[in-house]
Image (cartoon, rainbow, N blue to C red):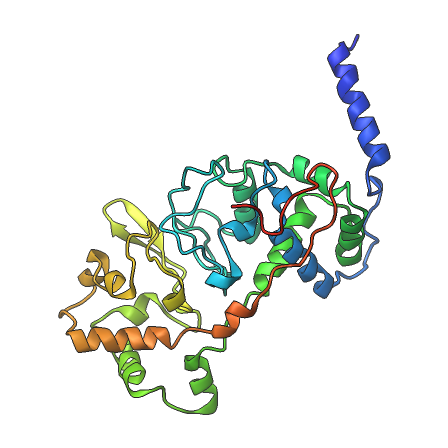
Length: 313
């Protein structure tokens, strides 16, 4: 079989890529050598803010999930890969996101790896591929060292997903006034305490869907005819506006008054009751969640020498 000149060109590029790569293509994870969990989380954090994951080198996971905004972006719907477009959905918080049975507003993914894979390959989000990302990261001896240190394995889809998953799993938020009061056996302030009692009433239906310590039931509900949406967590809800999968509720009051939530009530809420319920929701805010910081720098990559931590948009 004769190869075309174009085929020879691609073979030469691949060969040169292996020669100049910062990582050894033949490195394998030693049998039985344990994963370094701390190093894996640290690597995942850097990758979370790494624009090299996007096709244009200008977007990162942090583009839509910003630490200073409780890992949301406070937009009605998140910005798309094309700067002037939107993705069509509101960015949910990543705080306490790990361990769910379903991910995305419509619940279409069942693992964090599926989420990462879909976001990376989505033409409206990252528009990228693992082959491109791997080739880019392999240019950095520092990235090679970090992957080897954390996983004793080369850079690739599985190891990239493992690192990002480890970082998201570390984004826990369990120090809200609600948590502090429970640990110390104390009551919340009067308005929030009254709101908690309202929240627990069966006739309101709040605790039925927003159950457990994460304030979600892992189920999907029909919020409009034919539109099924996964129950979001209520932790940090006061600092993650706007609300709803489409981001159309600008305030907690508007979210409570949405047609879907009104249908759950046997009796309308009085203004004072609504205020008390909001006071309880505000007591679910963990201010330590805003203390997460982005890396100061990123490893040098020849293909993207001027990229910014967290991306441009």
